[in-house]
Amino acid sequence: MRTHYCGDLRSADVGSEVSVCGWVSRRREHGEHLAFVDLRDHTGVVQCVVDGAADLRSEYVVRITGTVRPRPEGTVNPALATGEVEVGDCQVEVLSVAEPPPFPLDDRAADVDETVRLRHRYLDLRRTEMQRNLRSRAALLSAVRRAMDGQGFVEVETPMLIASTPEGARDFVVPSRTRPGTFYALPQSPQLFKQLCMVGGVDRYFQVARCMRDEDLRADRQFEFTQLDMEMSFAGQEDVLTAVTVAVAAAVEAVTGQPVGEIPRLTWHEAMDRFGSDKPDVRFGMELVDVTEVFAATEFNAFKAPCIKAVRHAGGSEGTGRNRLDDLTDRAKRWGAKGLVWMRVEQGEGGVSLNSPVAKFLSDGEQSALVAATGAQVGDLLYLVADDWRRTCHVLGLLRLELGRPPVDEGGLQFLWVVDFPLFEDVDEATGRPVPAHHPFTMPNAEDAPLLDGGPEDLLRMRSQAYDLVLNGWELGSGSVRIHRGDLQQKVFDLLGISAEEAHAKFGFLLDAFRYGAPPHAGFAFGVDRLVALLVGEEKSSLLLHHILNSHLDQIS
RNA sequence: GGUCCCGUGGUGCAGUUUGGAGUGCACGCCGGCCUGUCAAGCCGGAGGUCGCGGGUUCAAAUCCCGUCGGGACCGCCA
Image 1 (cartoon, chains in turn blue, orange):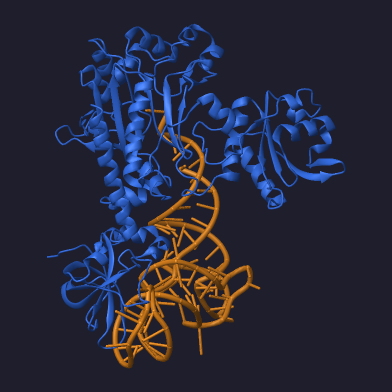
Image 2 (cartoon, rainbow, N blue to C red):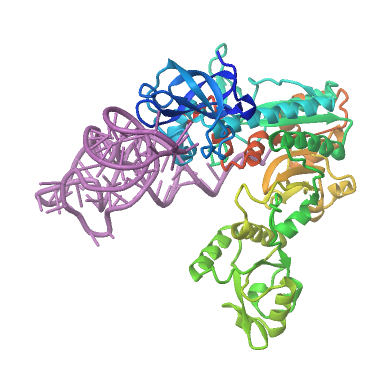
């Protein structure tokens, strides 16, 4: 039916007789015998010059046959890829008529209510931006598959209708026809299956896996999402980081054309200490400054704490009113701080001075040491939190994001590995049991393994062989080296207070499998939806990208 | 399960604080004019159960109660 796509026509095609098919995007009439029709397909738009367009309307589906010609002097449109040419001497064939669309199918659709766009998803998809998103996602998945294939990974499909597995979220369930009152669960992740693959000698597994979790939604969280899931045998952390880096780099290059290069690493402790987050956004500075020593001998009661840190908001004083400071203080308290100390850095007699409700409690020496430690300049605002190390970092990390985080499409792509996560998150005060930070199959760091026999202090100091991939402050994915030996696994279960019965009920088939010879193995999974969203600079990943064909589910729910 | 915000022609909004005729803006739509536009322009027109139900009032888009729908966040997502 057609010889060319609309968006592909260029000066090189001048003189060719072409047929193009698509939707009428916009028409501009200049009397009975001259009209411009912008014809749109998934590649873009091209201007067609027709003799009268009275019987053409928006979104009519047409086939236009004509001759490509250069646009007259002065009428070239540089904003359009096809802007140097137009299709003239047009014969127009209407293939389908159309009612006016309920919302504009151009950039202005971004302002339209999402429910309206979802109700007419097929119209939203016609938009150039949506086509770009859709195709970016496809290109990414294709590149990832090639990259995994090239590294010897085997794509394995794991079951969708399964017995409930013990991940943390609520299962989506499907009623069984043959056994009324019983249900299948839909997988929250293929975690246990991929470990079975390792026992089964698959060696290197991957899957573009759909995962479903019946939890309440958030702006960036959907019922179902897609993970690139992988696992490798006779491999450790370095092997996984390398393999994932190759796949992610291929994905990024497929969408953006830009190389990724080496992905820097931070230990979990350093990430928390410097950025107050286990998924630091390193597109901007404003790192946390430790000033505990400055106030080691302070008289100010609020600063008699194990850890005091500061965030410096350069030049922030002028634009920050008292209301804002009160608001930030409220937030800091909601985030878990006892309070938030702020200080305006001002010009005093013979040097800078600090303007703050608590300044009178601080000695001159403490004030000047604080200024020196933070590098504060006149016009800056300093924020301080004093608490235990963990809480101080956490609160200031959130404050740092609030004060300095750039928009989603600025600052480039800052990938980061965060390694050496703690093995245990906490020790339950009631039971004395440690709480695993990842999952109970996570391998402890080899050096730290002896600490398993220690007390709570030792346990909380233990590092694990778990790692996260972070992009611009988002946790893209996580993984770990798994415990493959029964004796060590038993020790961890004992520590966690997981009884033999419970372990058998929850993970029985995996533990059984491990009795027959489990290779050392390690793996990773990362969220495809968020990666695509970040690569195309889109704020809302899932609404625009993966709920393409089942948006009605959202409305039913 | 909880807190808060929003429902006004097809779309996006203003009007609600302080009740007074469905009042207004932009886009879209329909008709007319227009031979180089590209978010074309100019002129004219159509299009409304102000989410729904009840209450207060001489009078409700506006105030009160309830309800439905949508959104954000908390809990939750090992």
